[in-house]
Image 1 (cartoon, rainbow, N blue to C red):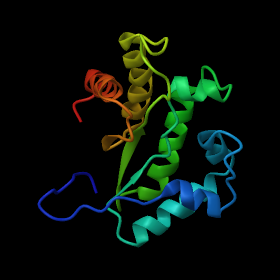
Image 2 (image 1 turned 180 degrees about the horizontal axis):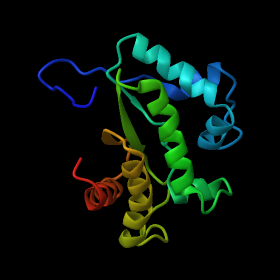
Image 3 (image 1 turned 60 degrees about the vertical axis):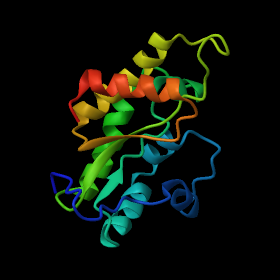
Image 4 (image 1 turned 90 degrees about the vertical axis):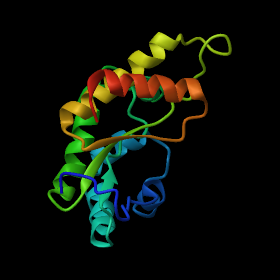
Length: 164
């Protein structure tokens, strides 16, 4: 599967976090790092979604931006982790489903409410988006953004590295 046909229903995967919890993830550590330590969990979850009819799965990169990873004391591994997480999903999806690069909020605020400049926010998302693009995702999903500035920064970041 290489393209999205939007003339008919397109089914995405489901609540990955809930399914991870059923398989032992307790939230005490960074989900992305836990998945890399327990790769069979995401493979099992995504295999079940594809078998149930999902046309796409999200790479488990929700908290994979450098700012989110830094909250978990993971620094300098954004590219490596995002590519490895995508590879797990691509191994499962093969030609049966598409893999979306998942980008989510940082949890931090821009000036004047916080310390981040808009440019820093774009750069944060751009690093992750470039890693996802290089990993070969079929599309990007920008989700659960808490404000328009975060969403705009993520969109600009994706557009700067991809035409998807």
